[in-house]
Amino acid sequence: MKADAKLDCFGLLCPMPIIQTAQKVKSMKVGEVLEVAATDEGIKEDMPAWCRQTGQEFLGLEEDGEIIRVYIRKVKD
Image 1 (spheres, one colour):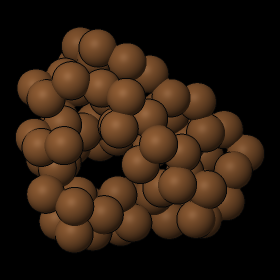
Image 2 (tube, one colour; image 1 turned 180 degrees about the horizontal axis):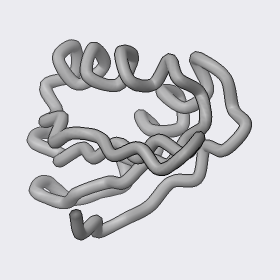
Image 3 (cartoon, rainbow, N blue to C red; image 1 turned 180 degrees about the vertical axis):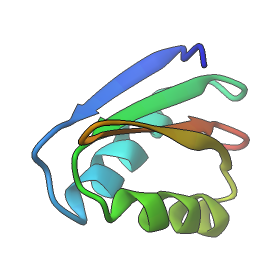
């Protein structure tokens, strides 16, 4: 999936990937896609939940070994 911005959260544990995602999304334009690459398995449940709570769109995830990539579209400010 093509992303407009990428965020490296390798080695970070919950809640840091979510906190960094929230900060990054604030600087993005509505409609842009963010790719978050993480190693914490918790992101698989945490990111969809965060998207539901904040109104952003969870586009899915990809796993490549221990790397988990999640994709989010900014829907609102």
